[in-house]
Image (cartoon, rainbow, N blue to C red; front, side, top):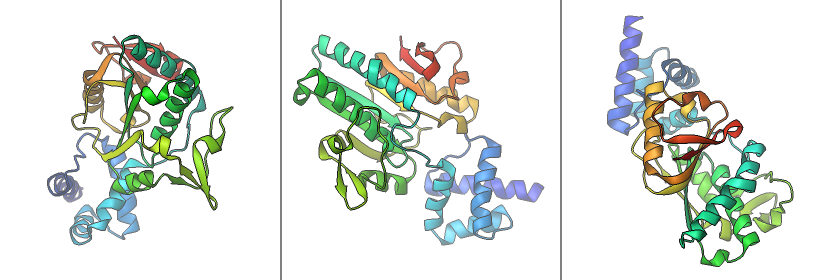
Length: 271
């Protein structure tokens, strides 16, 4: 057992030093379980042998990252959350920015996987601005980040085998068909910029109106969860909105400048 633990620590240090992947903040049991999936897939009996695989086969690193991040997503996943954004949150943000004489929105989808979430957000913004008129005067930028470069490559292509939209939405307004696939229309995709980013590191931009980070924090230890939330608060403008996953409300403690906006949906506003 002592040798196995030593091998695990060597593996973690290698991934941090050689590949820039900091695993120290993940929950230990989760980390061992996900690394174990790759070890069994490669027939490795211990961490030392898996470390040799990583050193000799760079493509194994991408497979490991994919298993750690578990990219499970779909358009408008958790419909009630997106209905809350659709009916109240986004129209409120648009109204506030218009009243300030600043027709712009900056949003961040943190942990975007293969892109369905930021594209869903772009569709909601497009719908809201089309309804209220004057959308051509608005500057909308949605930053979409993830650790998995393979998932980001799929997201940038904007090609999906199926789509699920909210009630009343017409797929032809947001997608074109290419055989059996759906391609995100240019007026939607141009709102979204994808980039690789580790959520445990410093936020890439500031002055966000809305941040979505759903079902990502649960993989981190509580100390790192708190640091990430503090980072979100630092880059949210006053009145900005933070949306978490439905299992993540317990993460809140005293001292964070956030108040419930739609508590059941895990939507909060920065005070």
